[in-house]
Length: 448
Ligand SMILES: *[C@@H]1O[C@H](CO)[C@@H](O)[C@H](O)[C@H]1NC(C)=O
Ligand SMILES: *[C@@H]1O[C@H](CO)[C@@H](O)[C@H](O)[C@H]1NC(C)=O
Ligand SMILES: *[C@@H]1O[C@H](CO)[C@@H](O)[C@H](O)[C@H]1NC(C)=O
Ligand SMILES: *[C@@H]1O[C@H](CO)[C@@H](O)[C@H](O)[C@H]1NC(C)=O
Ligand SMILES: *[C@@H]1O[C@H](CO)[C@@H](O)[C@H](O)[C@H]1NC(C)=O
Image 1 (cartoon, rainbow, N blue to C red):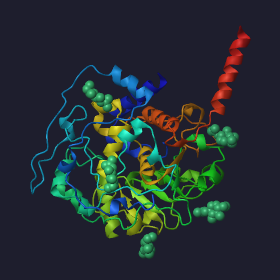
Image 2: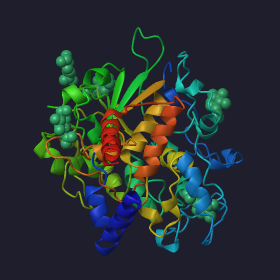
Image 3: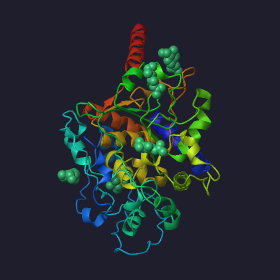
Image 4: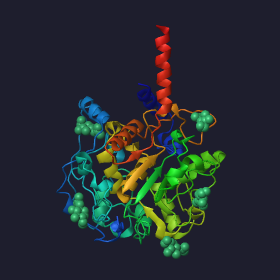
């Protein structure tokens, strides 16, 4: 109940203020939150969607709570849009606008994805790819294209992706505006991760979100002991090493998270994005401002238009920006995560177009597609209300904030479900909640 009213509340607040300003100014800053992964490196560069759209039976990985809500929500139909792709053309199709739809439109190629990434061959017996979980195996696409680059966008691809709202595609956008930066994105020269020399063939990863559960957890040494450590958003480590570790091998961000993290977390000692030597930077292209950022970043110039005009993106990477270690997530990968793992009921609401999984969720799924084993720390758990919103908030207990553009409860349930199915290892700390419940029980018993 509290959760639903929190969501309703944030929704109302959002409606009364400017939607985009609040959402995009504070949104999800920190929370949630084989033997070579050439994946994205070989194989034909552009595979047209038509070749693959034959396999479009939809596999959704559901958690218990999703199954419940799905049966509840099967009334009140709005029009379901069904259209097939226009024939291949040499020119962009007319712009499709978000405002034309009162809920997520369903195209018959919605669940067809670029899958030109042969998976890294793994010799790791414990690899999550060998999971026997049927629902997971059906939903999981080991060959999904992870990264966007200039060779991956043909006119056919542009026209296909124009049917999906950002960050899942290019709805609302003009071809020239987006292509100005996409045509600069080089094809990645190296896989995101490879087994460490001398390893047993397993790539072991820790994904560290910024939730309050990490405060006082003393998980730092365990986190740092993994082969690779993923972090996102306001990943403060200085002064918090004992709880969160000090290494970052992959840092996931948007242009907004880069700027907002500095603005809101400086007081907690966050002075720059992680910049370990040889760190890999991964960008979620969530909107136009990210394509503007990318153009400046890739050219080594200031951003020429939009809200980040005159900013110099390279300065945000503390000297570690390097084209060979910079990756941009592919729209199909982002849409696949939403459609198959996090299909929130919000997608059927009038504010469908602002809804998307959190940066933490996309980061965890990137790890699931590039690592053999994944441990998740600082993500939302059952007893989230026992902890502050962010681990840096250790002096004053704060409440977890629910922004209307994310479905935190759905994500929390998914992490638990993946943990129970032994696909990830989720860091949970139930002692605190258990102790409190025990005390409450004792207190009630005393009263009687
Ligand atoms: C992924 O690619 C591999 C190698 O190209 C292929 O054998 C396999 O069938 C593909 N898997 C799926 C689920 O498409
Ligand atoms: C992290 O801490 C370890 C142990 O104190 C130290 O050896 C290492 O250099 C630190 N790494 C970074 C990136 O600061
Ligand atoms: C960029 O990174 C690559 C791969 O790690 C490395 O080989 C190259 O020397 C780096 N370039 C610069 C300019 O630092
Ligand atoms: C949206 O509503 C349609 C029609 O009722 C239903 O089939 C679909 O599962 C709903 N989507 C989500 C994500 O709940
Ligand atoms: C953070 O952890 C410390 C050490 O366990 C504890 O004293 C403090 O109360 C915690 N802060 C919050 C807000 O829970």
